[in-house]
Length: 300
Image (cartoon, rainbow, N blue to C red; front, side):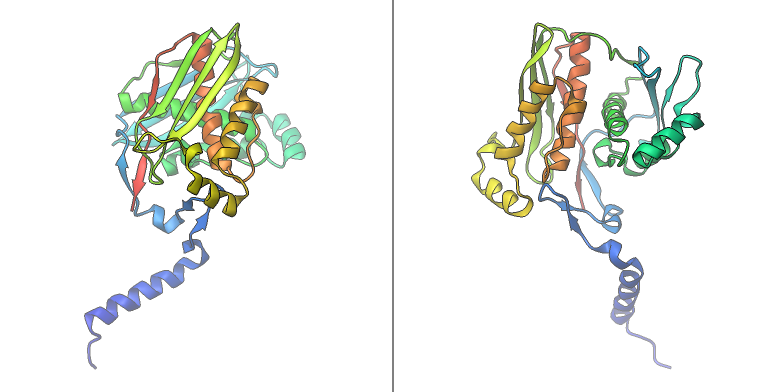
């Protein structure tokens, strides 16, 4: 029997592989109008910007219990430059974990369709899988807890990039200290933009929020008419719409958790809420040091 030529062998192998992948290999678009990479494609992506995490154990703890008697804590373990474990949870004054509270699980599941036994391990697993807080999805039915997780995971990743293993303390009940608090991404993303956010606090209240994106030339995304037109055609909203809406909402609500996600710009909205929450934590400490996010940028 004749041997199959090498080229045909390769083609046949690739065809079989694609057939096995099924519908998951089809790329989708998120509702910011940007291409969302498929599961298969994610496996061959490379980090082209963003500092590597340094090995160690990084911990964050809330100082006080909330109105329901819980406080959050989170630890990530980095080994070989990768997050190998994430332990995010809540505990009560007796040290009982929320994920082990059967009563809480039952009540929350009945109301929202999900409980701490479900969403807490899911969030931890997603962080280990994605290695990036910005790639962890909010769990439906546990939006507030998911957003808290994203904020804390992002802060721990930033600490791990610096190798700073000192415990981060979050004083959720502290008033905001007057000042200007700033955050900026270091790296231009794959779509050609990087995020910045400044909030101004006066008399303990957020009086101004300045959130936007910059390209390599320092131009604002809200001034890009072409981007506005294309995104609005695809999603029903553009940067000239959702960026002012998010800034306005933060000043009105005074709490990132209460800022509504803008339909058609969910990814940008979640990034805004995550960064705003980190700046609020800084304002609770009165720490006006500019925060630089050494954000990860990916390329296939």
